Image 1 (tube, chains in turn yellow, brown):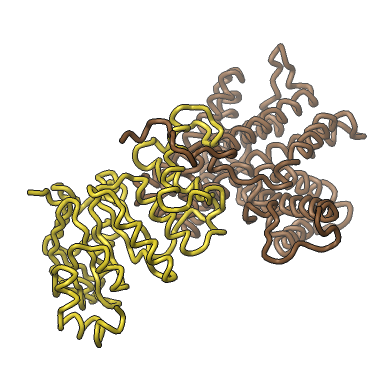
Image 2 (image 1 turned 135 degrees about the horizontal axis):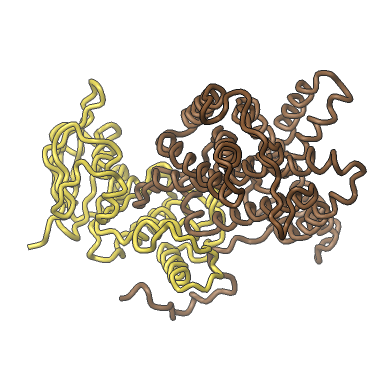
Length: 258
Length: 368
């Protein structure tokens, strides 16, 4: 049997009087591809942020690869193999795309606090290795020729690709993507789906997605959230066929969007 | 597949390393500016008409004002924190030197390292308190700490000798170099300031410096990447405290004494004014800011009795018309000149301006 990558056990989150999430259970096996879908305000992002450790749970327990991480900081969870992207772009705007990935690599395998110069022309073996990793990551997400561009000059789509490169820089065991297709053109969507499908099998993927097509295309299991609760769970085919999802999520026929 | 092996695939070989930002005209010709500025700084003691006035009041004072302001600019530019404690830390270093020399009667060889150490450790302690906050709260906490130090300095008889301060702290004759001579001391201060500048540039170029810039742009992401953001902020603040302390040591020998004035609010504001006039984004610009402020201090009285008002007006004019400071104005001038020079050289259409949509490579790095 495969191991459990992530276990969310009976987790609730209240913001003052607002019960954003109520008693959610979720279990993801190693290497699984899960999409969480739901309308705005369904609690998708709350779930995401609780797993990432952005804010504490009100009750319940979160385990990463068999370890209780409920009380751990974002940085400590990252060290345990969790990487995430951000919905609103929070890249390092004034650095180049390559420098962004370079910094991202410092969080995990390369020690970020080195007092050696980080110029690409540097001859030190660590720095050389780190820059060549940067190059390969940029190539992988299709930004091979954009390395020296300042992030603020990249298009929206390119920034999202860079997001992904930075998350992959951590060599995550669990990769969480927060609406990676938001604001994408149709062509960029196709590119993204291909990219996600090409991810190494050992990476467990948790995708929060508003867009049904992408959510169903990438996942092998889909979780539907509504009003702070998990209401349904099943294969993409089940979800596509579900009358309930149609009612709640779309308010109409799935064929309209498919 | 090992990630540490050298890449052999084709397509990975590029003429320019992947992360190299394209150099703007400004960056390419910057060295000429540095030669001119350093030449002027070296010649300064010999070209002024009244050296006994100019060297200490304009030259040396600009250098320590600039060095302390540089520590503020480093924090602001690379970490995104605006600290009002930098003058306080410099003052603490100055008090460290004063206490060693005046109260404990120690040699300067011991007093200077102790002063710098005291200032740096104080910076570390301030960082422990302030690093968790940001923006306006960070500003208020650093300001409050400065006020606490000021009241302590002006009230403690045993440590700081209250309002009378610690004196005399003469410039030392070290045998090989005689800092008692004004122009020798000036060159010592100049060397210290240049070294501080180079050190700041070096730290900014390391992977530690890149991580600091990551924290400036997006602390949330830095945590998500596994960085301990607080620890980095504390390290950066301790480093800038070290730079400020060096400025403080130059200051204490320049003034030959240390009293609560050096940690007062008005001294703190002087540093802020120097940083803003020079340009809060420019490490080198602070020295221009220092020169402007010292010139105003010394000569505005000849023009008007309200010289503080004049300083304030200059401050406002700079904020209004040159928010990137005088260094920013300099860059704009160089860029304007270089584009005008380049336009006629365009091979295809000499007199046609660059069509819209084609970006000038010199604008590659976003300004501000």
